Amino acid sequence: MENLEDLKNEIIAKINTCTELKQLDDVRVAVLGKKGKITEMMKGLGALPQEEKIAFGKGLNILKNDIEAALEKQKKILEEKALNEKLKNETIDVTLPVRPETQGRIHPVSKIYEEVAAIFGQMGFDIAEGPDIEDQFHNFNALNMPVNHPARQMQDTFYLNNDPTKQFDMETAYVIRTHTSGVQIRTMEKQQPPIRIIAPGRTYRSDYDATHTPMFHQLEGLVIDKNITLAHLKGCLYDFMKAFFELDELPVRYRPSYFPFTEPSAEMDIGCLKTKTELKIGAGTDWMEVLGCGMVHPNVLRAGGIDPDEYQGFAFGLGIDRLAMLKYGIPDLRTFFESDVRWLKHYGFTPLDFSSMTGGLSNNGGLAR
Ligand code: PHE
Image (cartoon, rainbow, N blue to C red):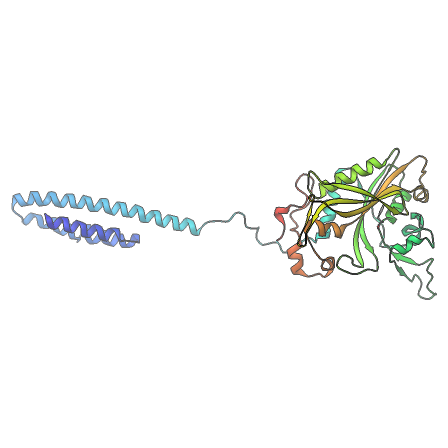
């Protein structure tokens, strides 16, 4: 009987050290199989005298039951372990991007145009367009900047030689537009008020450093109707800035300024915090200029064929690239136009995250970073 106790301990120890189901089954066969140790011992019972047979048989049965229980217990443990390993290997990360992975990226300038169009679109603005190569009437004269007007020197204009067979004539030469304000005139020529348009587009000035490139992007805005006041301008642009920077509160101020085509004119600043390493919009005591604006000058309305005694309006112009730099923390404007795929991968946006007022403007979670 004591031997049986030793045998039990020995077998159970073996069972408990099994790490694989196959190994456990080998132990089972070696003990309880047809030729297993306990099976053989049971077969040998018959040769024993009656009394011993009863006692030893009982002992063997208890041993067999204990071994079976130990086998069952270890089997459960090993099966659970196997299942957990399988589950671990088969996990799916549902947050991974769709496959095949989208390679293309939307340029920050395109993204800002989408965002701006979504905001002004909801306010009821249409989108207007004008040509990059512009005559001086639309780029200057009609905007209250006649020939020799000192304001023409404010913008470093690129002039084009219209007719290479003739001598260059500064007065009739086309320009590549220095601003999108010419679209104001083109819109008035086509349409009587009420007018409510934004005009996105490329603009050109001879300038080059970290915040200026010879080609850059502007957005023009024009609203003309009866009884339009400075209050409309202020409210409209304030609402726009808050929507654009996705902030409920944003300090803004309007500083008096000068543009020949608006009177009065102003520049709009937004509140921010400038440190050596970062710029935080909407907090702090610093100011950042974001756009030029004003009430459309009567001479401009007249040049566009609109009666200034009946109608008035406001206009504004903002730099798209600059807004992109501010909103997405891009330090150098020149990198926008280097066509570096690595840059685009870092600062660009996935095409599936389109901007909308209801679905989210910038989809910050979807930034391709
Ligand atoms: N055209 C001006 C510029 O390029 C901006 C502007 C547009 C200002 C409309 C007032 C009204 O600087």
